[in-house]
Image 1 (cartoon, rainbow over the protein chains, first blue to last red):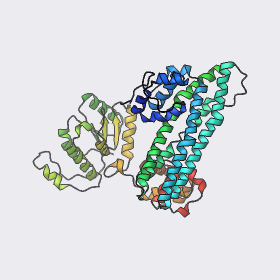
Image 2: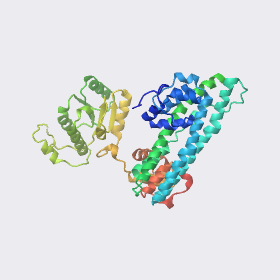
Image 3: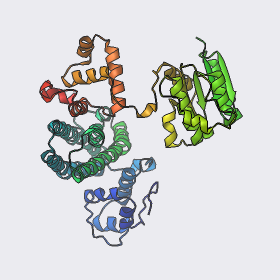
Image 4: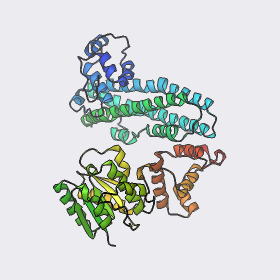
Length: 237
Length: 232
């Protein structure tokens, strides 16, 4: 089943979505969906687990389809729900994806005897620090601000002084996948053959997947989070 | 300077449009047009244009080879392929025997459909049918100011010795300004070198360039200035 350009709807089977695009797999844990769901449809699962169907579809479609433009749905997006999802995604990067990549790099370093490999590891370690800083900034500075704005919109709780804005977030939202692409090129084109065979291929596959994951993730922040929060800001100010 | 451009395109609307646009650029003294590939070889050898703008649909595999050979000869690289011209011996259009003066020659594609990947290496520039006059002007200008790249321009990714100097100094932790002083070139030139390095290697970060430099022996591990620099 080719899903290119196809919009995911509530009637589709979850298993068909995975068949069409394996990248959908990483999204399930973020919603508490566990594999082993048989022939259930998206709507079924969402009802069973208490997931907001429209929100689920918005996330899946924006994540899988670069051309999906969620214009109409944006009005009814709940910021707290959205931030909950993004934090889950960040946890997945920090607790699952990055440690796994580190173990692959470590194996590569141990197997390959070349003076450049130490530098490669250093490059990677420093990159990981940058990713951690980037995620921590969002978790600790940007998201709490957005939650405060959202709480004000819902209950008119007194708003503390506004010391931040979504414009700052947008400006600081640099792409963190650029160095991954450098690393990928170094391993494909420039790092000399070192008898590493499948080890390097495994590492590359993971780098490519991670890069794509980050690009798709950033798209949700750019196309959904930023416009939604901007709307809220207009109501508050 | 007496410059000539040749436009090869079947569609009259597009061809006349290009003639009009290139005419307004004030870059060319002679503008010639042809509408089919049968006149291409004779036109090229007779006119010896500086720039050829051509629809890739007019280029079959044989023509592709001929054009690449013509360009290499014109730009002063590559050798004359006599076997090829013998093969064309019966063809009255065979122009292989004619002496071609070395000089300046660039090829641009005019695109209104998809372009074959294999053909891409032939072109110095790609003009889209939707491009504005201004954009076309920019593309032709940049093509005219670019140094001749023998063979396939898109695949040449080896660094010049000057570019290697820049990479070495970057790896040692020098800033653009310091590099310009060290190499006696302007900061602007350093930036141009860095752009070209990034384009050639497809490595954007300094940290990535350092790894490249060590792999290729441009710099030794113990020459690296300090760990701080890797994150710049």
